Length: 283
Image (tube, rainbow, N blue to C red; front, side, top):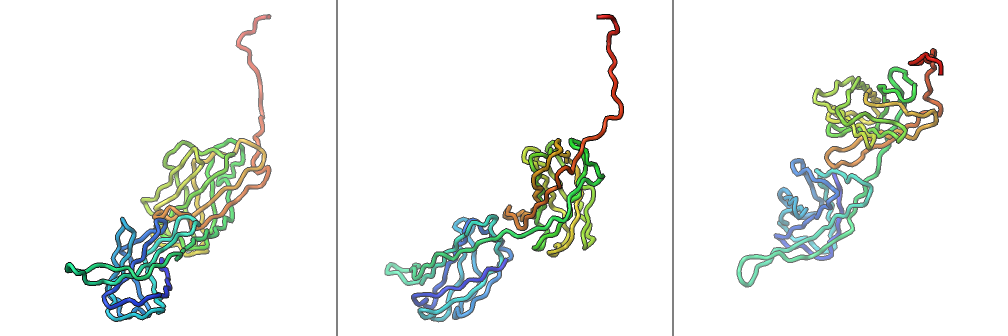
């Protein structure tokens, strides 16, 4: 993900100066993918370095003098958005490298800027249909379910699909669930290594590591899975939540829900009933 920054410095940055960008914990950095560029940076050269412990990204040396009140516009590619909608704050600091009386050089702070925040927003996922695949509408019966949906953002290869059922449903014991079928407008096969896992207590099914290529936004997807037991009630049920989740940040990218109609499930008919006593003796 590329982030754009704009900073107006209050004090000049001399030749040999540099600046730091402190990255908040909520923002992941994929250092292998970092690229960057800066406008009005007056000869700032080199590749930024990254310290994952201090979370400081150092941008190399200015080779020419940069005057006060100069605006520095720069972008950095290699971030992963926060996994929540809580604002995450970057900090920017500039430094001069000055000679020391005892010999050598030291770093002298010049300007510091706080309040560079990024706020992730939850995207929309549209669930077009959810239904028992085999038309098994009997309550309390195990069955397969088909989930049809499309997301408003691209679904990347490191994303999972998480399906959370309301309390009226029962999910089978924690184990690998079976993916009955997978289909999309792209007609791409799922990966052999695809995983489908259940969390019984949380009523969650997670389908992951399934994409061979990125799925563009607005692509219709259909997923059929097992391990689900129909609600044990004739009343209406709560929302079924479908989400795409970034496996790197564990953050939800797109989210949507679907509610089955009231009286969607039904009881089966008892066609025969009889009682056979174990003892036919009088009294």
